[in-house]
Each structure stands twice: as C-alpha cells, then as structure tokens.
Image (cartoon, rainbow, N blue to C red; front, side):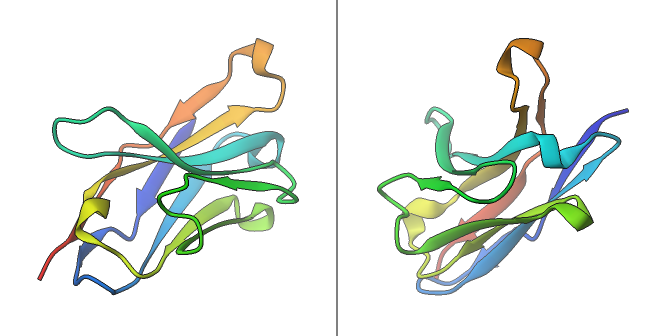
Length: 120
C-alpha cells in the first residue's frame, strides 16, 4: 500500500529547533509535489510549506517564512521540514502530503501526522 510516514516530532522549548521527516513508500515520490500542513487543537488544517517535485521551487506560509525550510531528497524518497526559532503557536500535529504533478489523476496521499509541542 502507498504510504507516507512522518517522524521527528516531539517536545521542544521556545526558540528551539526540530527537523521533521516524511518517508514515502511504494510510489514515485519524484513525481509528486510535497507539502507540510499542520493542525492545532480547535483550528483548521493549514498549509505550512510546499516544494515542487524537482525541488526547484518552494512556498511558505507567512507565519513561518524565514524560520522554516522545506527540502527533499528524491533518491531517498524522503522530504523534510527544518523548523527553527519555534514559538508556542507552532504547537500542532504536522502532516506530510504528496500530490501528483498531474492533479487530474487524483493521486493525493497523507501521512498519519506527528505531534510537535513548543513549551517551556
């Protein structure tokens, strides 16, 4: 079965850093746009960052711009989200998403999520 598996979440102090990983299984990861979303308690899921399939273009939510970096290593079928200067508002479940570059084909996969808690 096609899978995305997030890892790297945990508890971190404000101002600290964390790196999330997203491992892809049983599909051609290099043909998919990868995005990170997050969902805080009582809030809607929001887009945090995205990266094109070839890694040449990235996009960030204004709230994380300059602090987060999205990247990917297609040879390892893995994507990453480096999070620096974390603030309590960043506490959420973070999800990895992979969407085929040909959107009309309808291939769109989600990971199970990993909890990030920013607290003293």
